[in-house]
Image 1 (cartoon, rainbow, N blue to C red):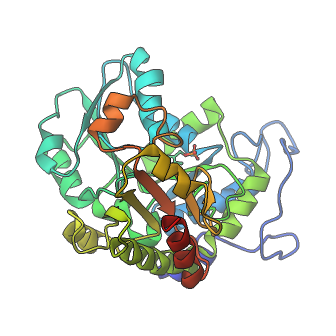
Image 2 (image 1 turned 30 degrees about the vertical axis):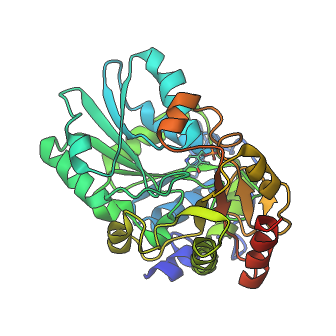
Length: 382
Ligand SMILES: *Cc1c(COP(=O)(O)O)cnc(C)c1O
């Protein structure tokens, strides 16, 4: 089955009792047993719920995995992966991570004895230089947030596995989605998503996903999901499944509009640097072209006027772009990383990686291109 067909049919079957084409929302916590231990595969909804199962099968299918898991948020999916590790284990991660991931690593898990090194994933050597006998996990995100840096998933995975094939490689695939790149097929062990973003696609839920292609790893993750309990509920599972069915056509338009917005900004006199992997002058354009089918809907840029006032004036005056956190929904959003999504990163760290007051991040939606460009133009020219 090819990708577009998989988003609609992957892992799905019609409901048995009625033939319902979409799975019912199974609002139930528990399931009748005919005799102690005799049941139809469902005992208690923390372990499994049929609506969630339908979604988890879809998640597995779209990333080319054997198993998928749905969590109550993207962060609880990451939390599940880290619980595979033991005190003393070392993790190598990108230095430009989603703010909440960085916060979880440094403020929740460090105190349990996990050791983190943050490296620029631009170079494979930066990663391999940090590998020790205690390294158990490499965590990478590509494209990164908000500077749209690209890591070469295949090159990093190959180099890490050459050192020690037991080191797990996990990829946060939230920005790219499986429409653009499928890390399991590039050698990664675990794919993670904030399904809150493109997979759900309509800004109407908070959810996380993990996908793997290994029976033993799936068993371990399922145990943690069940034992820690941060599962996705049935209503959210239904909405996310509905969202996934249009992932491919939404992404196609996100990419078209993203490219148009990036080109427009690049030629605008009020705009400085533009960060979009589809632009030929993007430092990682070659890897992006090799690794991704297209370049997505996330675009960051700097205003030439570097003052906070200029940024705020722009942010307060867009009308089609809504000023809000999050990304990946059908509607266009604009965000100020310094004060919003990346406020939890200490200022010296933030400045070091280039998240300054003049930086603006756009999640380009699937509206008409003309309206999007006109909105940006009027807010830039105020
Ligand atoms: C939003 C996001 C997360 C966290 O997911 P939640 O659903 O908000 O918990 C993790 N990684 C990336 C890249 C994100 O954009």
